[in-house]
Amino acid sequence: MSDQTKKIRVAIAGLRFGGAFAPIYHAHPDVEYVGICDPDAERLQQYGDKFGFERRHTELEEILLSDDYDAVHLVTPIPLHGKQAVDVLRSGKHCACTVPAATTLEELHAIVKAQRESGKNYMMMETAVYTYQFLHAQRMLEQGEFGRLQFLRGAHYQDMENWPAYWNGLPPMHYATHAVGPLLAIAGARATKVHCFGSGVMREELRQQYGNPFPVETAIFQLDKPNLSAEVTRSLFHTARSYMESFNIYGEQSSMEWHMEDEDQVLFRMGPLEEGRGRTMAAARVHPAARPDLLPPELARYITDQIDLNPDDPHQSVLQGNGHHGSHPHLVHEFVRSIVEGRSPAIDAVTAADWTAAGICAHESAMKGGQEVAIPSFDEQ
Image (cartoon, rainbow, N blue to C red; front, side):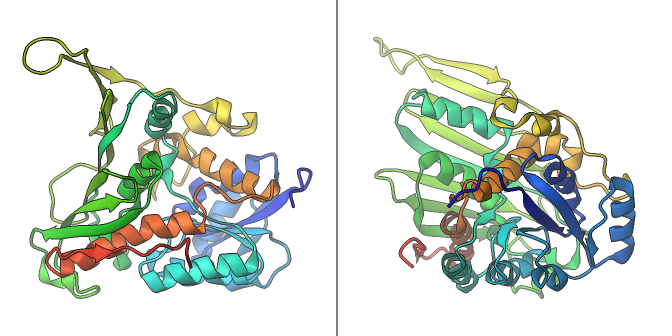
């Protein structure tokens, strides 16, 4: 049942990255107020004072026990996501969660179960499917410009040295949704099985926490769409490559590649069939447009304006500008409107589980020397 007049009350848990979202929620016309939560009391007070947030909490449990909130956006360390999401849903509150949804299949099953039993919304806040680049590709797909999809490729390169301790030695495919999500979303598909291989040498101290020996992992996924597969490469350590969340779409009529954060996409168009060897191919740079038309006016500025965060605590997504290429306001708007309209969000619990499980199973395959691993379906749970 939707209530188009109701304004919702949101709490943000975790301010190191969550601080980029709190002002957007505050500006949303369907949000009554926003509370902030962080275990670092000093960060909590400094952020609250700077941005004028009066409702402050040092413990997530305070929020879950309170009747003052309708929804919680978790921007907390990766190992906490699975349990915290279940706790939020069981407290009777809607849950948004930064990626990945969890790090085990058991946790993913628990999230889907908790969402169905609670009847509350769960949304994984996958930035990669709301960027300028993805929205441009999505529009091309809808207009039939790619023709039949032939192959998909994604990659996410990032060096995690000196990040918080829970990142040390993390299996690359456990944090693969930035590369996996755009491919499965474009295909409208689920990955059903995977072969994955680890590569490179990890220094000994980074192997201890998770037992992962690989700084790089590369996977081939079979999708549940006939004759379509996808390749994903993920690196976290010991690999000299600048930051990039990349996706390539290869179609029968047109293809698109995006390889560098500071460069536009390349669009390839197939020429007509003529005499001679091979068809002609035209290549051009494509500058994707911002999409303020998809947002309420109050949020449009967050596509182009950087949010004023603490300059002594910069985050890669903010330094890139525009919140992961303009995605943040789209994520907030989709989560809020799904609640107000009484519908499932675009990246609901099952979709989140499908995208996250692909990476979990890929790492399992890598640890087995590339053996085939079946990826479970959560829609049948």
